[in-house]
Length: 197
View 1 (cartoon, rainbow, N blue to C red):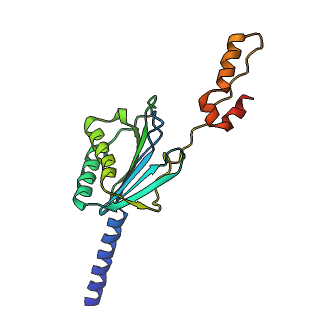
View 2 (cartoon, one colour):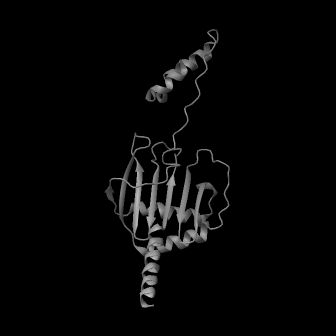
View 3 (cartoon, rainbow, N blue to C red):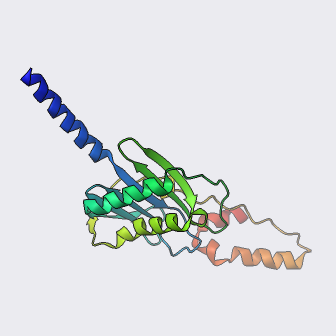
């Protein structure tokens, strides 16, 4: 009987530890209306933080960082997320020039994936998202790699439609077309120039 009780206690302790290890909160951001703002990802677990930031001039390439995290900070953020986002009502409308965000959390008995724009958050929700993002400002150490959800971080912008060729008699359209071919954006992305030929 004692052996059975010991085995049960060991199994219970292992399952509790496993559940704690699976707990996490992840916040990722998509493209910003400001092209100089990189996409980021913040992942926190009960005792650790992981952060990724898009490399400048390398769409889809990321630098990774990590460090230990105070368990009290994690517990406070977990409690706030359950309070602020437990019954979040998703709004499907896109925000012109808005940055899409995604919050994913997985706790012992609650998990959810929420996609949203900052403009649709209440003041307390926006403050909480700001708090999670600010965790990236703590002292972090460079890391080789850590997996993050890729929905927003690896999203590629669609190729723009080709510029229509104007009539040779329409001089104004012809000038606009020629400017379009010499547009600085097209010059940076040679593959887009092919669409205009």
